[in-house]
Length: 202
Image 1 (cartoon, one colour):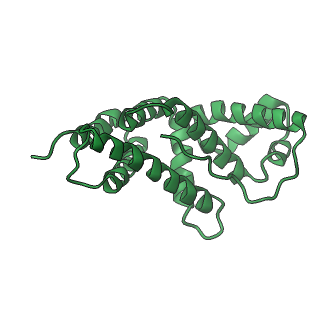
Image 2 (cartoon, rainbow, N blue to C red):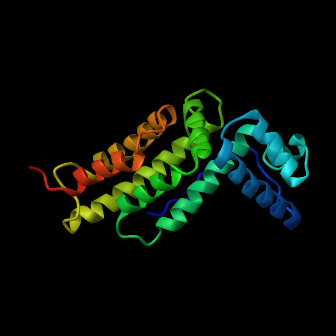
Image 3 (cartoon, rainbow, N blue to C red):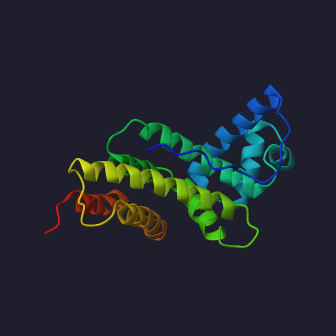
């Protein structure tokens, strides 16, 4: 289930210096750790800056804006999840692993939900990013489900395209419900849908 990484930010960048690339990577890794614990809060940006020995303005120098930093955090986590899923013949199991991981990083889930909610706003940088992300994610999942249908591991009374959209919608929806009510077992809910997809129609 391999996808290309959506572009983050809209600026045309000059060729970065190696030191700047390393510094940006350090900030991004620190941001992942902070947001995994805290999520989308103004204090988090100050904490990231303090941990890497910069001001908030210094941090944003490497990303352009607060929103671009947030998208870079989401992009990096997506990249890690995609790398973990590469080579698998069962995209549904890969989705379940991602959902299970997300239950341990509520701050990143809050950040993801906040940015997807902002994406429909005209001019918001999350709009183009999530349009590409959803397109690539749907294409990858649909191809994986079609492969499973071809060898009899997934029901074929519904198209792979439809099943892929149901999966993405279910994961996004249950994450929002989980943020409101942490007692919800996201894995159990998504696993129920996976069971329906892999069970023959009655």
